[in-house]
Image (cartoon, rainbow, N blue to C red; front, top):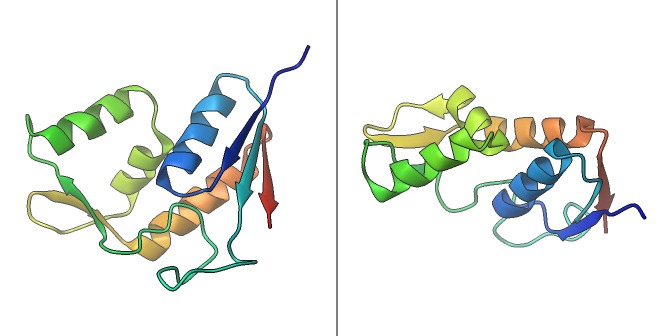
Amino acid sequence: MSKSVRIIGAGLAGSEAAWQCARRGVPVELCEMRPVRSTPAHQTGDFAELVCSNSLKSDTENTAPWLLKEEMRRAGSLLIEIARECAVPAGHALAVDRTTFAGRVTERISREPLITVWRD
């Protein structure tokens, strides 16, 4: 019996969950409504689009936001990897170029053979 996972929404959590499942050999159906249906907050149909801020919060060692990002990095997080690649100056925070970040997440998720994307 083959098992698969269906994930509703390709936001930050959905994109990361799909990536982690695929890394472990589990086929994924990732369902995303955009760009077929949009929201007032979103500007694109890209996955993991940051809508309120480009900050992923503090990158200062031993703070709660830093610890969460460090745990994600150690778990092989796609989003943290791409966030580091798209980082922009922001003092002690990890901030990203939102357009580049969402575009790269969309590209990597879309290229993963174990992830099937459904837009509806």
